Image 1 (cartoon, one colour):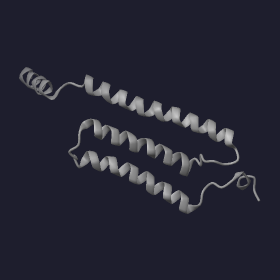
Image 2 (tube, rainbow, N blue to C red; image 1 turned 135 degrees about the vertical axis):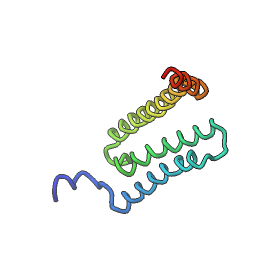
Image 3 (cartoon, rainbow, N blue to C red; image 1 turned 60 degrees about the vertical axis):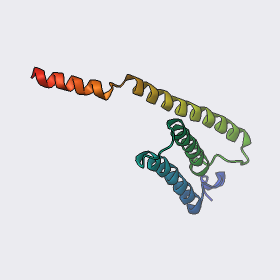
Image 4 (cartoon, rainbow, N blue to C red; image 1 turned 60 degrees about the horizontal axis):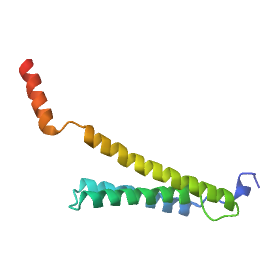
Length: 122
């Protein structure tokens, strides 16, 4: 038995495929909501997308990084706490960046006016 296999299971093909299917589904659903122009409030849409993003990060942790309730409980607890911190940073950072981009983008009527001025100037 090699040293690599003694440290526990790295997941079977079925487990990895389940994780892949869940990750794909959790990517496709928000994409379909946005591209399908589903008529729900903006806040609800953001909430759904962020919720599914959080679930997808958890799917990656469990199915691909194998963070679970195993013998090395201290390391798993530390990894879980670190994962929650990273999750909060990523989600909050994404919302902050998108909000700032939305606030600092030039509105379309102003953009049309600028393009008209440029075409008149030559």
